Figure (cartoon, rainbow, N blue to C red):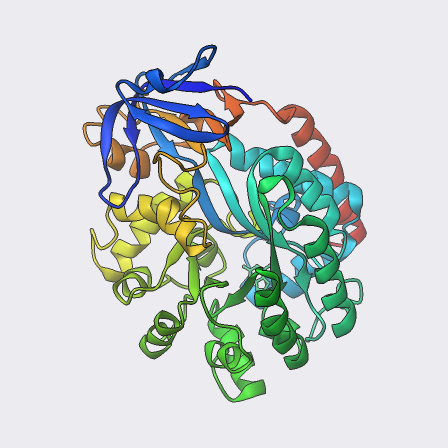
Length: 443
Ligand code: GUN
């Protein structure tokens, strides 16, 4: 395996002290083996060098809520709120997916993510065909925890997505057996989509099955007021109460969104150790509101950051998400309530901890896996970058990403994705999007 010296950058370790220094990062066997001006001494020659002069060297970004299967639907579901968005566009489109379109969608998303410096994701698929998504993830070199969506109930769920409870559990188990731990970079997450598409029996079964396999549980919760009202009409309680009643709580459980959480529910999540992933752009686009990030962090809840899916964003870009997280926190809780360091923490070590990966990734520290992004601070839109962390969060853009590495493997060099033929990925996505859009009756 190639040994690397990332040379001459401003290293922003994103550790708990936000340590930064000028120097090098030495990588051997896929791990960080030394940091600092003399890091090269830790590498036995031969090794290869990556030039990071004029750049910040950061941990690869962690995004805790992504739908790779929806990347193909970018721009196809505009201007409606959550439940209408799902029933009118997203579910029919997902129901029309086949192996070719799932592969095209996952590759488009993974290429976009890698190109913009994201190296770890928690992903939710659709109900069928998830082997194609995992296969694309494995080829991509990114670190992925993911799983098929589970949907055995609910109003407006098309026939092509709805499963029986037993079949949903069986397929999730088969996928977990086949993919959990593959390549050291793939993990399984049981993904009951949300309460409105899952039976009580399914949710209770997931609560038992996931911990027994060391798997995560990933679901949407407390996203939109109309979703909460529909849950209350069925169960007479809030979605967070219902999920906890069925056993879905604890450090292996990751809720996407949490926009509508009450102070009492936040305290409950903090006590149980349940994680929340903030998706500011998706929440704005679907009119869901502004998530209570400052309040969650103050109560000790572990929070990550995620772009969600392309049709409710429209990008999977950690720079957009960081900037929006800082800005909407200002609108909700006052300017500076989530400063650049706090935002960067959500996108790196905080996000990694929310996914239970904080001992492996999320900061640049000796012994951690070598997941990193080299980001230029030199262009006019980022200069003078006297505080490089403020520049990264609020001024830099994905086009500033020079090099990206995951597990010591170079994924992007000089701004070019190495594992993907990006123009081919985009052209294939265009063809497949048209085909699936027509089949779903959305185009
Ligand atoms: N709730 C249930 N499914 C979805 C989805 O695909 N995206 C979002 N944003 N919320 C959901």
